[in-house]
Each structure stands twice: as structure tokens, then as C-alpha cells.
Length: 484
Ligand code: NAI
Ligand code: MG
Image (cartoon, rainbow, N blue to C red; front, side, top):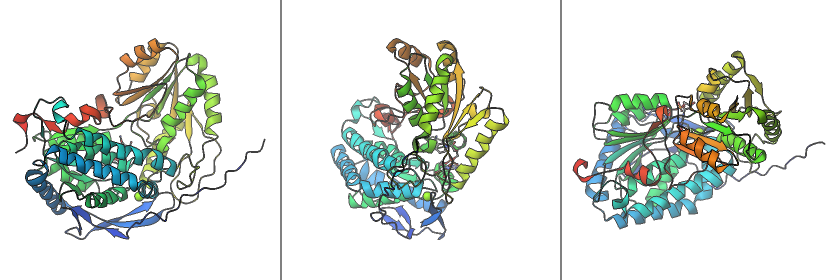
């Protein structure tokens, strides 16, 4: 049978009002960086220039921290909690009203399919503000004593894989708890954070409560090392997370670190295979596999491995790769040239170390950064592709004979962020979940997120939790330790 073609269904760019350049958002205003330096952000699907972005250095970070400190002591920590909550509700509602604009800008800047930014990133980001708005006047129930206090000024550094959503994970709980923030978005995806700065203005948020400083790792390090920061909240690579932990070790700064992962997605022989195949695809190909909790190690019980692989390959042949602005697209562009090179580098070791590569036939666009959906079979635990985070649409498949062996292999990793279990038997799911060393475990589903549910890892996947009461507690301190 010859396949039928989908007509293209592009989302319009008209709603995205991207300025040709952006300043830094400090003390409620967009200002030029002191040294006048800038960098550019592009659309990774086309390599087109989107905007010129201000580059913040130490002097700008200092201004941003000062503005956050003044807003903290004079306004935000003094404001009745109920009033703080109202601002968060207002921000959440504006994000919903401007959802389409946010989705289009996110997809242009990041390369992810519009279907995902529209249906996942933006609604979840708004949901985080709604959820935490409700907490603002109920902090005594967060589990840190009857009179919890904010920690003070928080430096927040986020990655490029879920730009607005990671901003929401960071800013919503910090503000609900009464802190003020200086946030640095990733250098390849600053645009939705700058749009969010406009939302703060629109909501009438007091000046200095949220400051957005754009730049690279050097900018991030300047924020981490600023002496007047009380806490660092970071999401990104384990390598940078470790560097941050080292730099704050001799200070009073606290930290939440959300780092890498190499999640096992375990399929037992009693699983509903068709559903499991959907879960495998969602687990590794959602957001081009640029997901810290991606199900990047598939562990199949040996007696069903052939059947699962056959169905998985058939399903993968239906994945539509291409224009992220097309509403039919499943797999968009890789976020940057650097990330594409990293995916090539680690994946190529799969070939040289003896695993077997398979990808469906698919035409990749000539411009932009692309990688086809890929699986490796015949992977052993010592292979680099079984140990390292590839952070791309590449799945490593291993097998196990007994459930106990499956658990042992699943836990044989330096990470411990998430895991998936596919089984028809509730008792087996509970048995497996109890033994898996992972912060988040999904059963018969994958990549489900909710603002009320804490998220975080074991081992080298990080410190602390984000989301829910546990995440909120990380932005609070009991009376005695409160920031002055
Ligand atoms: P990265 O960890 O370098 O970047 C994340 C954020 O940290 C960015 O905002 C960056 O500007 C900032 N940053 C970089 N160096 C810093 C420093 N010394 N001090 C303070 N902030 C700093 O991640 P990158 O280079 O974009 O990606 C490299 C690999 O990291 C990926 O291939 C992937 O494996 C992993 N990664 C994991 C993420 C996760 O959510 N777990 C997110 C992004 C990357
Ligand atoms: Mg970009």
C-alpha cells in the first residue's frame, strides 16, 4: 500500500511579535547591559536569526541582585500573603490569554513541535502559577514549621529544553513563598523568558521581584557567585550542577539541583504491548528526547523483546519529522548545532562499541539541525549509549530474563531521576517501584507532569525536589534561619 501524504498545516507566525533586540529586565524595566554586549538567538529549524539579545556580565548581575534585594526587603516579603497570591493568579491568567503567542515564540526559538508547546509547555507553565498562587497564603502547611519565612533572593538558572516551563517551575514557587528572583534563561532559548518579563509588567508586579538576565555559562556563574544570593535553583547538566555545588560549598547559599538522567523504561512480559509501545515512543521521542527524565534505556523482558521491537519499529515509521510549526509534526528540530554534535558523538559510539542502529526512513530538512528517531539494539550495560545522557531522539534497548535482573539493570546507573514500569499486575508494579532508585516512577504511562507532584532525583540526578509541597519547602526556611 502506498502511504498517504498529510497536507501541511502550518501555525501562523503572525501572533509572535518578536522584537529585533532585547535588553535585560532589571527592576521592572528593560535596560541596556552596562558593557553593551549582545548575542543572537536563532530558529534551529531554519537557522534564521530571531533576535539580538543583551549579554549580562558581572556588573549587570550585581544590579539585578540589588534590585531583587530591595524588592525583597521593602516590598515582597512585607506584602500580605493573600496579595502576593493575587499577583500569581494574575500572571497565570495572562499566560493563558497569551498562550498562543507563547507557544509560537517557544517553537520558533526552541525547535519543538507546535503541538507540544501549545498542548504541554504553555498550559503546564500557567498551571504552575495557578497552583502556587493557591499556596501563597497557606505556607504554614508546607511542612517547615508554623511560621515559615522566605529564603531571600534566589538565583535561578534554566536550560533550553522546556524554556517557559522551567521558568514557571522556578519562579512560581519562589514568588509564592515570598522570595524575589534573578533568573537566567539558556542562551539558545531566551525569548519566552523575555515575553514573560512583559507579562510581569502587564500584571503590575512590583519592580525588582522578577529580574531576567540573559547570557551564557559565564553569566550563570556570576549569578551563582554573587555574595548577596541566598539560594541557587539550577536545572541543566550534571557537570554544571557539580560545578555549582563546588562553588557554593563554602558559603551559606542553599541549592536545588535538577540534573541529568538515564531512565529505565521496563516492559514486563505481562504488559499490554500496544500501550507500552506508545509509552516507549512518548518516553524517548517527546521533545526530540531533550528531556532529563526521558525513558532513554528500554529494558525488555526477553520473551517479548522481538514482538515489542517489531511493533516499535512499525510505530516509529509513522513519526513525522520536520517543520516544528506544522501542527502534524511529531519530532521537531534539535535545539542547537552543539547539541546535534553531542548527539552524533555519543550515538556514534553505539556503532563503534558494537550495538545495532536502526532508524525508519525519513527525509530530514536540508537547513537546520535534525536527527532521525533512532534505536540501538544489542546494547550492553557497559556501552556509553547505555550509561550517558544522549539528550536526543536515541533509544538504547537492553533485555532481561527475570524481574530481579530487570531491576538490577535499571538501577545500574549513576543517575536516578525517573523510571517507567509496564505490567498488567498491580502487585508487580508496586514491587518494582519499591526497588527502583528513581525520584519519579510512572506505571503504564510516561512523562506525566503535574504542579502538585514533586519531581527530582537520586544520586547524580540532583538535590531536592521541585513541585508540590516538597518543592515549595525548598523556598522556605523556619523562622530562625530566615534571611535578614
Ligand atoms: P548546561 O548545563 O551547560 O546549561 C544549562 C544552563 O546552565 C544554561 O542556562 C547555561 O547557560 C547555564 N550554565 C552553563 N555553565 C554554567 C556555569 N558554569 N555556572 C552557571 N550556569 C551555567 O547544559 P548544555 O551545555 O546546554 O547541555 C549539555 C548537556 O547537558 C546536554 O547534552 C544534556 O545531556 C544535559 N542537559 C540536561 C538538562 C536537564 O534538564 N537535565 C538540560 C540541559 C542540558
Ligand atoms: Mg533559539
